Length: 219
Length: 219
DNA sequence: AAATAAGTTTAGACTTATCTTAATTTGCAA
DNA sequence: TTGCAAATTAAGATAAGTCTAAACTTATTT
Image 1: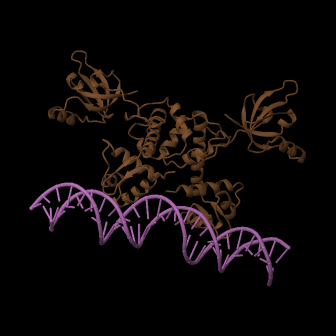
Image 2 (image 1 turned 135 degrees about the vertical axis):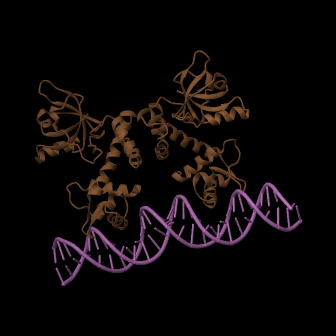
Image 3 (image 1 turned 180 degrees about the vertical axis):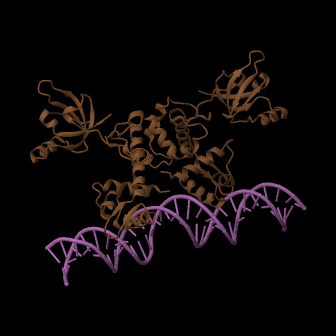
């Protein structure tokens, strides 16, 4: 059985393992808000329990066991977030801290019942995918922002166009990977899109721009 | 901010303070599954933080602050139990352990939203009353078992008749204070009552008996 | 190849929270 | 007033996590 802190370390390693590269001690110490020395201690512990592959000075990666564990924690976190937003009417930006606590509740049955109760959602209120009970990530539906329905919410997952001009423009608008977008309206005349970004700023982007932003719909 | 263990001690003291008598160290050590020495340590700590009135060798009682704290924990525990049974379809005898974990989640807002979501219940699935946000216990509705509707659930809270013969009879039936009862049917002819006790045993008791059992309906 | 910087690990100690055993003290009832 | 059960204290153990400082490794520069 893992302690909460161990679970948090494993989760951090998971989130830092974006492109399967090995994760450095310093990177972990930064997100865990602690010193590299503390991280080294913990890495040895997690390695002894075979949650991670650990070669000194070479960084770490999760073992199969570790990845499964991480995905369970992520699953719990995201399911609770759905619960808080959908059932308890929290805003999606208020739920993280509470979910940080709830994700450590230990009960397989509880989380499966919760999953059913919520209608087996595949993504959380931020648009992040929810692993299934086996720890498999659902394949995200991908559409272009230009194809999203009016009132549809989605999460930005990438861009088709990579020119600096385009990226700088998006930057100015405050749109980046991970942004939550909602289509408020679509202008019939030129198919330009009225958008709300991160539940805050409203703006209009051209059809040409919308065609180059890849999003994943949030149910 | 209290640790989980401190919360558990305070809750234990609360539950042991049935008739406002002072609670003994040994009684606490028993329910907390620890030694009297550990309890003494903790009592000093809780006294320093003024959650309890503590005079050495004289036992303890909760201060106003301590009682408020205890009632908040009890409130959380019971609300989560309602959630687990009503929303996640757990049986009422499966929920205690999970609620033991959930009761320590820290968020005022969460618990108020949960309360609303559940329709502000006044008792948990075991029939125990749920304190309100201010820490006040609702006054329980009290009716006689003989008055309970068919299909009505209730919790036994006392007896009107105290003769040994009566009490021994109830004992044999497995009915005691705290038992959960459900009226399965009522015989028109003599008003005798078909009962299910603690979701298990089914039995028939006479109207005369039912008239002497005081119960509190569970919505 | 040495020097250096950056990153990482080790050693050892510390904190916090809780528990244990053993000895001692207290309250109270016979 | 004595004897015993209950409670407390003392002293230390343990577990989890952390820190500082020194030592070490790796990669980069000269």
